[in-house]
Length: 337
Image 1 (cartoon, helix red, strand yellow):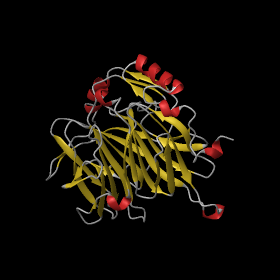
Image 2: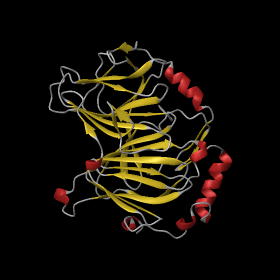
Image 3: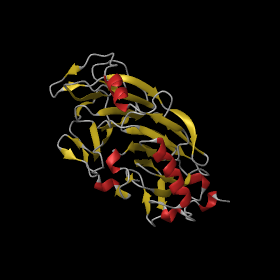
Image 4: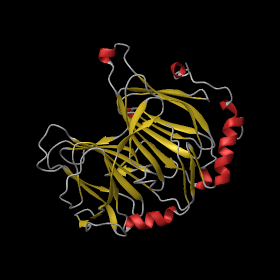
């Protein structure tokens, strides 16, 4: 997906420290550890993206420019006639996690893939990639359901920004799903949950966990690496965090504290939430990167000079973008007129 804004932050470590100390709720001690609490809540408003698409963006907005190493989070629900045609990336990773429908991918290296519900694609752009991401719909308009999922952008450590591109694609059946307690389902994309390791091993070691609390009052404590920045995004339903009685609704992103001694987070579906809709959310954590962030659209570098070089490399087909010259994807041909 394409992000048009030019943003520069030179002290992400300062942002991390401020967020870690903003907690307004006391941490809760549990039988398994001390829970993180919420330091900031951001509602994901709808914004235009790609070609005719609308997404709900939380990270990458004025309310939350970034949360190192995380650069952007989009919750997309795409209708027929929209998509994300040919565009480049450098210096970052994209994680696409599909909830509903079919999503196709094609890049200038000749790699093609298809995501169906529950699948994930973890793409490391490294020195450069150009690709298209397009939803696929039933030709019968009456049967064409929206394509829904999430895409997360993750910054790469400075030493890894020019590595070769790579993919870690996983089908739903190859991703571990555990049930540590009654009414609790956890999908372990990366990281660890209750002794189960994720199927993806990303550069930088980010954790990505999907949760479904299927019964009112269902609760679970999820350990997280101390010092990692972490957040929750609620896809649907209601959620309580730590010992806070407030129930948070869907489309809210909750930034978690990162104080010494906080070893995880307690997650609970409200006991009075007796509706049919389960609490569906993700918990994502990553090691903060103490490096400048200079971003121009889909190019993420550590200096303005590098950002300008990325633009020139893409335009002239150099330093990783050699195959971009004249390349046009097949899956986005209908968007070229």
